Structures are given as C-alpha cells and as structure tokens.
Image (cartoon, rainbow, N blue to C red; front, side, top):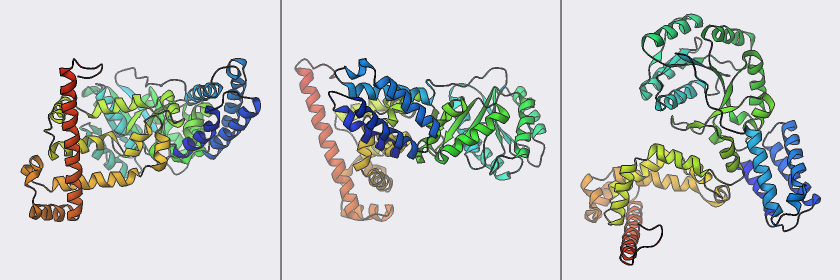
Length: 444
C-alpha cells in the first residue's frame, strides 16, 4: 500500500533526520523531493503545491530551525500536515431514522457490489441489522453476486429479478425492511464505464425516493487523479457524503487518497485493503499518514488481531508453548490465524520501519512456504500431527505425495518445527528460573 510513495519519502527524509542544524536551502531541497514524490504518486498538482508551501512556512519558523533536532521537527510537521490533508479525523457514518439508508454509487468495475457486502458485514458486527438491496437492473450478474455475498455473510438480500424499475425495487425494499426489522438498507446501484445523464438521472430519482443518510461513492484507488475527477462529478450531481477507496492494497502511489478531501471537501470513510470480506476498514487519516511516512500503524494491527484472534485460544496456546506441548496441529491453527490477519506485506507495512523492511524481504516467497507447510500438515493424519516422532520415511513419502511437494520439503518442515519446539522449551525453562528468583519486571 503506497509503497512507491513511501519509499521516495524515506529517501527525502534520510538527510533531514541526521542534521543538527538546518537552513532554508536544506529545507527547500528536501521539500522539492517530497513534491516530486507527490506528483509521481499522481497527487493533484494544486494539492501538492499548497501542501509543500504550508510545510515550508512552518519548517522555517524559529522554533524549528533553533531546535535540538530540526530534522525530526520537520518530519513531524509533514506528518501533521498530511493528516490534515487526508481529512484530520475518522469520519464515521451518520445513520439516523428507522430504517436508515446508504446509497452506494460509482462507475462500473469500481467495486460497489463487493464493498456493499463488506460494509454490511461491518454494520452487522456493530449490532445493526443490515439489508442488502440489489438495485442494479442492468447487470443480472450484480444481483447474483450480491445474493452470494449475502449467503456468505448470513445477511438478507432484497432482490426482484425481472423488475426494471429501480424505484419499485427501492419501495419494496423499504417495505420489507420495516416488516422484518432491518435497521439499515444498503443500495447497490448500477454503474457505467463513464458518467452519463441516464446514470445520474436514475440515481437522483432513487436518492429523492429513499432520502439516504449516506451517499457513498466507491472509487478504485489505483486510478489516481481520475478517481478524484469522478468524485467531483458525482458530488456535483448527488452531493455525496463520503467515499470508499477500493483496491488500496494494489495502489503503490496514493494519489487518490491524498487528493480526495482537498479537492472535493468530502472525506474518505472506508478503504478496501484486499479481496476478502474482512479486508475492509474505517479510514483513519492519522494512521494512514503514519504508514505513508514509514512510521507504521500498530493501532490498526492490534485492532485487526483482536478481531480475528480468540483470546482464550491465544492464552491456551501460550501455555502449551511454555510447557513445550506445541504440536503440528497447533502450528496449523497458527498459520490459519495469520492468514486471517491479511498478507505478510500488509502486516509488515503496519510495523514501524516496515517500508524499509519491504525493500529487502521476499515476503511472497515466505507466504508460499507457509502455504506449503499448511498443505503438508493437512496431508497428515491427526495422530501424526500430534506426535510427529512417528513420521518415518514411508509416512513422509505419503505426505509429500499427498501435498504435491518433495520429501526434502517435508523434512524441512519437521526440522523447522523441531527448532521451534526447542526454542519454546528454553523460553519456558528461562521463565521458571526467573520466577524462582523472584521474577523480573514484565515477566510472568
């Protein structure tokens, strides 16, 4: 996410960080690199120019130039200005009325249908009762896709196949919601390859009927400034309340995210960070600014872990590790928990200094190895997973054949697992020793 922009900014900051004294010339040189990084990231020209001017004025103040670490002060100014550029604070949904309505709009292919499902999942977790409404009468596949998402999420979908009047579908959905106690309706509307009068006229009629509390424009983040141009047109016609940026995991530049609020005045409310339904989160400007500047986003990482990790299971696992009772079955569960957190690239990107680590780490190779480990363990019997010592040559050949790998790959897995077990046993012994000595701070 924003890898290209983040790496270029790191280069610009490298010289600033070590400077004990700083001059206007130093500041101008560094900010010139920041400006070029912004423009290469497809940030709106005027947005980039104004941003650099604000940072420059603040950076040349006496408090910065005469401070002990002026370079670090300027980086803090950059961070604060970037937070402001991205929208200052998280803009939550404004949902009032019973039922309340969310109108999802955007061009064809931006990810409206998938984002509708992801948003429904998020609202369901917040104890609301969402209803997905298939309001795209031009693309039957959109209705089928929404029904599939509804089944996966166990969330009802209102569909009237064969009906071509969007207003009749909307009125039917409102009646259904009132009769079935659904508190929030999410309307997945039709898109086009480009903005046209037919699309806008239909959306305006639908908006006037349902009177939505939120009109969310779904934008493909990878389209850069073009996404902001689309947002401007939709806002003029519909007065959108915010945006959802999709495919943020594939956007190495970041132009749309950095330009959206400044150009349209409307906040980014959610971002899609992957294809999975759980890879969808509220947009927090401060956290995003920290990630772009290579400072990580530990808060989001902890929140994601809390969402997918069962604390009771985690405590039981920790106890087994300390006692040296960790099995291949436990290892398999750990691999699957890690997959729920997202890709390794995203996880490392959330750690401070993660952008630097991504330059040298071959995380794609590591993920492939984890998938092979999972396949090999799945090819074992339950007895073999719980007692790997019984894995003789004949069993290893069978496991290799069943998981599509070679016997040396099975041996590699077992060697790494044995090393892990030995390390855990040593840690367990060390903790026991510390407890006998009265313990040390932070040690249980």
